[in-house]
Length: 179
Image 1 (cartoon, rainbow, N blue to C red):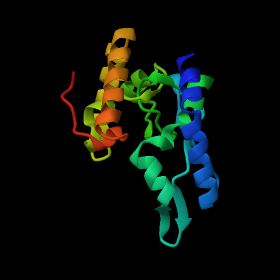
Image 2 (cartoon, helix red, strand yellow):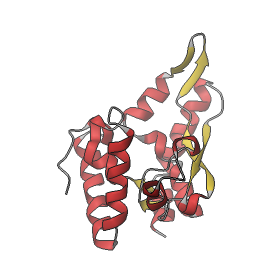
Image 3 (cartoon, helix red, strand yellow):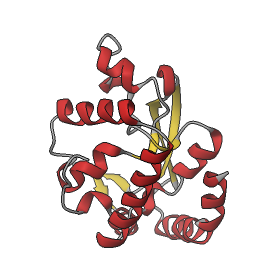
């Protein structure tokens, strides 16, 4: 229900972003990316398309840069929340080719529904993309072991604060101590 409410509340921004992307003409408005959900069940993660294919590879579009700067490219993921693919809080949804199902740590991470808000991203913030896969996985395993309503509410509060203090982009902020 919370996901549906957020989808309604963010509808003006979502529609505006979709119109801007369509006017820019960078291809389809939405990007579907295969991910693994709870128990390793595959699903398509929805995001706004922010890149354009061109000579030398993909390039960030002007509208795409704005959407990424304020994390608005993730608004379509609320559809995944409403569909039940994502929880509001959980491990970051991961591409199938990055998951080793033989690794017990990955089986632990996949034992819960992935989330719109990720503990690993909140902890690492600006260092998330530079952090090793081992570090990110360890943080996601840690989340699965401490997950619960109280923890999830605190993480949602931290995510809201991070969005405000980083002007919309959680990954742009300063890394936090593990709590």
